[in-house]
Image 1 (cartoon, rainbow, N blue to C red):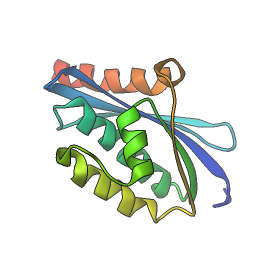
Image 2 (cartoon, one colour):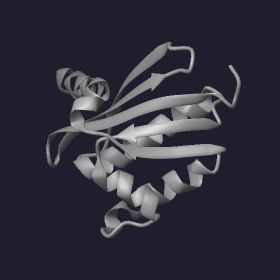
Image 3 (cartoon, rainbow, N blue to C red):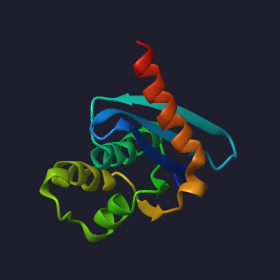
Length: 137
């Protein structure tokens, strides 16, 4: 893999209630066409915080695979707008955004794009799987 290749990372969060148990979904589409799917439990209980956590999880996974060029897709308008603006209105989310912005310097190319729920079904499914796993235990 060349570090200049762009990985596409689809991220989403789901919660069983708000507040409620949350799960994170990360779908990596490698430049080769190979994919990886991650269904991750979360200690968070609010959907917006979990959406930020899903983006950070996707970033961590891309970095751990050696990517320096990444495009991230989220269906959270809050996360997308906050990353682009570099700020959040609700200070509760400031630490999450801070972590994301700090981590973003690890990338030579870092793009976050909003997509519709319909285009993010794979990550959504993975996030919901993570909730079901937690509820079963």
